[in-house]
Structures are given as structure tokens and as C-alpha cells.
Length: 61
Image (cartoon, rainbow, N blue to C red):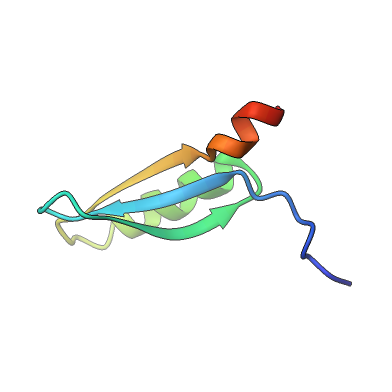
């Protein structure tokens, strides 16, 4: 089974105190992405984790 065609429109983004943004992962549902972001924020580091939908998925969906 190949997941090369999997649709993963939700991103978890980490933003550091300097405003740099890094993609943490891609997820199939907003709920799944939000759970990951919440878990990472709960680790007590001073990082901001946000959930965003990819631009390509907004255009097609």
C-alpha cells in the first residue's frame, strides 16, 4: 500500500521567538493536527505551535 497519493492538508507549524517558522508535520484531519500541536505545547517549551490548512487544499476543497 502506497501513501504517495494521501491527502494531508493540515500542517502543524512551530514558530520560534525570532518569528522563524518550521513545518512539524502534515495530517489528514484538523483534529489530528490540533492534538499534535496541543501535545507539543504542553511540553513547556516557549514555542508557538499553530495548525494551518495548506493553500493547495483550500483551492481544491
